[in-house]
Length: 234
Image (cartoon, rainbow, N blue to C red):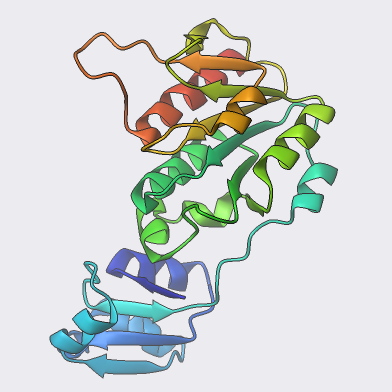
């Protein structure tokens, strides 16, 4: 996969991550990051700006790296390493890579054990997610599953309480007990949780809204609830 950005390049180099090939803007041959790539014996192709833009439409800052595809954590390994009081975040068909990257950063900062995403019809780890998460991917275990509801049932069988998020038929998020093994579900930006996932929840939580809008950005909502879990577990 291709990732881009100067800070991403720095992180890959500093963390000794494999870079198969680097594409660098031809005006940045003397840049410190370019020198580091050379010192690491990484193959570099220098391109004109229009060539860089064709390769990556995003804000590449003159650096595009080809790296191995992201390796997801194995679901079986997760169930064999849940620990005594697991804290898991489940993303129900999230679509925006910027939201995903921001949630990854929050999960890493909060010490979340696992992030679970469905394999189909969902955002996956891509260059935008990597850039938005700003290095957090190295420290978070992300599990990609084929059937989200089957995984939720397995979590329940392993003693986890499942807390979904929705405004209807729900209680305020800060009235629930998160000191127990728990999985928090964040729904998609446009549709929230799917009906089957919602039926599988033990509790449905909402974040009270006091203004004129009736919803929050998915990554903001996730951060609020995640840190309520952290607060209660101190």
